[in-house]
Image (cartoon, rainbow, N blue to C red; front, side):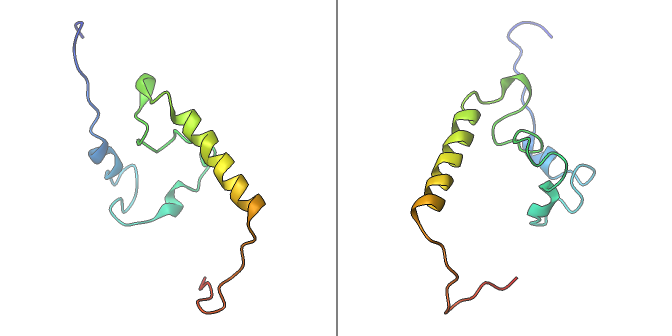
Length: 87
């Protein structure tokens, strides 16, 4: 490629590709519960892809850990007796 060439990835096509994700248009969060569950950049294009991935993803990830840790530390979570969790 020559200098100044702009390359864009088609995230919509990648995430709705049935070869990559079976039944790609169906809401199914379990599809990401695989060997790469700890790798936040694997299969998620919200932060970009390749060498141009967002440099702030690590800050956001660590911030979410702090927020949820503090929620667990500061509050007691109980099941709602009126609307019990249906699993």
